Amino acid sequence: MDKHCRTTSAVLAEREGSTRGADNAARRGRYVAIGTTDGLLRRVLALALAAAFAPGCGEATARAAYRGDRLCGTVEEEQVRWFFETGVSLVGPPAPSRDLVFCGGADRTLYALHVGTGKAAWQVTTEEQPRTAAVFDADHVYFGTRDGRIHAIDAARGNVCWSFAAAGPPLFDPVTFSGIVCCGVPLGTATVLYGIDGSDGSERWSASLPGGLAGAPACRDGVLYAAEAGRGGGALEAVRIATGEVLWKCALPRDPPATGVCLAGRVACFGTAAGALAAVDTAARKLVWMARPGQESIGGTLSSEGEMIFAATREGSVYAFAAASGALRWRFAVRSPAPAGLCTYEGMLYVADGAGHVIALDVETGLERWRYRTGHAPPMAPRVAQGVLYFAAARGRLAALPIY
Image (cartoon, rainbow, N blue to C red; front, side):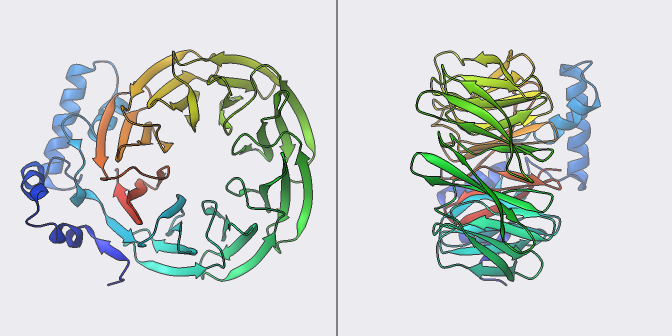
């Protein structure tokens, strides 16, 4: 067995005789996989309850209720498919592909793990520690390190294809589109954006944002939407990734951006310096609404699904807003420090809170479906691919939890 990869049974065996053992045994089986006899019975019961207590909601609600409802409440450790131990802190959210999931560690190593077993397919060690999360695109994995380099790795074999030396350490995870890899680095109070040829690592273009980035940009249809903080007022800029051309700029003098950008519908959303959530219509190229979550302040974590935008606050809540109007849909009190990350997947919002939980919420209602206690505050956002949720389950431990 790979020394890093540990199955759930091995982890549980280590814990026999602990004070948690009796409690876990008492609760064991509350989250039963679909496919077993008990799992089928529980699914039928969940569908019946969903029909009884939520009439008219339809099959989608009933199905979501089974994926983690109040019948289950807490997901137990034996439901995790595998753990991978690095022994050091993980850097950035994992990047899943069809066959492999990629994650960086503070030991200056990028790991590629088999999605089915968690065993290492390969690993690459760099001169400096990763600074960004890994990003998978087509046949390559891209990530940035503290020495200002962007690396391209062959996803299948783990060979280093090229390394690009930027003017400083990267500020956000690489963004890819149509063979171009985009990154940004600080230069004084400004931010320099680079467009790198994905085939050979050569520089295709560079552009300067004088006000500096407020957070990670977002990309759609070959356009990069970047929130510029600015001293005398910020702006949202639309940059063509293929050429570096600034297509348009929406000035935001009163309340400049203070977070990265998240796209939902036709709007680009971001948190502001005053703690509000703002939305710029990318077609009309103007600010269309601002929403303030009561006495709380929007932090650095945003996510979206369809026409909904989700935002975490510094005080420990998650809010859902309609992307078109900014109308509040629901609020969920995490009751912990600001969440470390959000992600959405097929009608569910997954929250890594600041108290050591991964929580699954219904995106339409904000109702909690289930939670998993990691035992520590997750340092990164979770990610989902092909029905598997990947998240930090402890310091240096990546977990894979099937959610279907």
